[in-house]
Image (cartoon, rainbow, N blue to C red; front, side, top):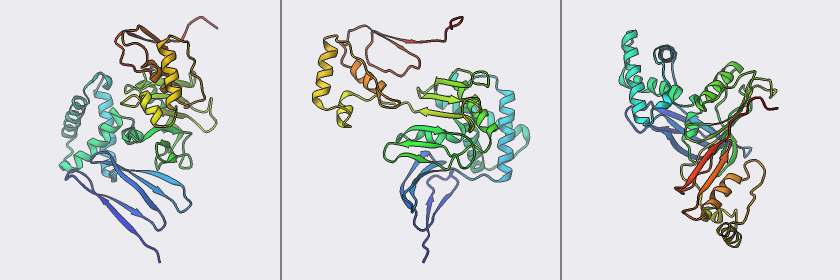
Length: 319
């Protein structure tokens, strides 16, 4: 006999009621809020053992989709400024909310407060955030977000601290949609990506590292991107010992080497933890030592005050 469990997520009066149907054999591993009270994550395990990451957001009807499209079009035309100039996110949110209310009045569109909150959520998500993948940026358990192309058969993947690589229910419907998103991603990094320059290596305002390719010039199945999320709190040597990356004797040896100014080379494969290890080792440097770092993408964060953080730039005229 088939069994069906229904889970409701409804906490605040402004939140549209979200219902999740869990079919027979699909185990719910975790449910947690991402952007309260609108976006939630549901991690499930299929009968095959495969784990999937579902992002739940308020459903939109045809009328609401048209309103959001009109509002976003008018915002693009009326606002000639970079949202990144707002250091305070609360100030930015207030600014966008005011603009959305003004545009609704200008268009003569009347909506209830509940409908407005839902419309504003999507407008703010798309303009100030990273559109459909913005909720993933709010999950502290996600380390990487990657996309290998467009289409339902190529969903966005995440690297989860507990479940490792798992697919999501998010995907880009067309090559045009993905390319448009890649251009926006590059702009947020303060860089450019196009057919002429199809490879991007940059950093988002929050410190997350971005690597992307545009169109089919480099990758056969269309554009791709990987976002390695920025950790709010840097790992320490104690954390690396706790996670089993180093044992106490190895870390003590490296501490001794750093204190005695011995040259240390940190190397490894992609995502092996080179930058994390280097960042931890630099913590062993004397608090008053002068430190100079040179990086292509700034990732090192140390507490030393006498620290010059340098960034490389592309050379011109050299081959």
